Image (tube, rainbow, N blue to C red):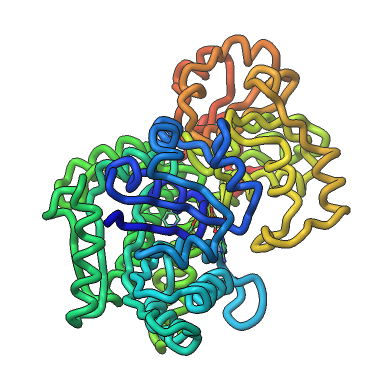
Length: 484
Ligand code: NAI
């Protein structure tokens, strides 16, 4: 009998993960579900709703054969043997825990729907990142709302570790897969069923099994460690700029220590994406609730350093441009939170652009994957307000001061400064001379991702800021006593 999998949530995680299962397991029928009709229509079209290298090939190869996208949520869940829940779990915007706790509204809605329509045993898989102990809440929602005889549920935790921009590579060749479940006969049988799915392409020793709570917490802990590493190197970048040390040289040196390792040591204008900040703040909230105040403060400092990094960048732009950017055109290269994705959730570009807009700058933005509508919406929303309609006043201000350009060179023409905020490969090979010639002098580059060759930029004539690099004497350190 063909195993039937349904996945609730056709987003950045649900779409690619299910496409990979369908691609690798010809004996499984996979249906990805969403309440968002537009999103499902896009998954069924030639232009998929998210950009990921390699995703089209995988989807187009199995769509309509073993992979389906549908809005018939109740029907497909009722028919499934295994139901993944991959809905969004954003930070709460209001009420108790606002700004920290995960908003479980979508999650609970999905669980209640499963209870209502199920009339056969099912394995429910937590794919979303959730607070530790969520499985217990799901079990209670399900067991208290079952309407049909024959429905019975085993809950598994199987968090996703893919990174946007490399999702297909990560799914095809994961460092590990973790499956947590109850250590009861039926829980262990459910773990084995899911293990058999992954084992069709993932080496067995890389499929880890655990109890439910370890699996749930492992995801939060992994994101906290990754973000902590970025904040650690970013904190060193601030120290470098004050001392004449070079953060890239330091990263190379400390990364050569096999106990530290070389990955994830690139200093930058800050981490972004929908997960790091959300998951750390959620962990902070959980720690506080458990009376672990010092532990909460320790992890919260990772987010504090990240916010400081974005502020530091804005401050040095303003102070170097003679303490005023009012009415000046500034080119923003890159808006996505990292290269090879069109995702802008929590991108540092939002905070940097807002910091410059607050000072009256005019921004010309170029990003190869982000639409004008997306940028303008992001800049019109208050922090944590992405699910609310934005105010007309802010939208008008954004419209008046943001120009979205279809090329780097157009964005830079007539600009006083260029800020590089995403590490797109095309920014490594820019024609700096052409850009310099088209700009107001003195022309500045503020490289928030260290993608440009600073030596070459200076030879061309630019005043150049590389994040965490020794400061060019023509730059003005905002905290220096000599700052104008
Ligand atoms: P997303 O926002 O892109 O997708 C979630 C989808 O769920 C949306 O399309 C929404 O319409 C749908 N949805 C919500 N409630 C629904 C319901 N009741 N029935 C049907 N569809 C419903 O979110 P994304 O990025 O895919 O994240 C999902 C989860 O995975 C989150 O918990 C996130 O923390 C986690 N995660 C995300 C990663 C990423 O790189 N984006 C990586 C690893 C985990």
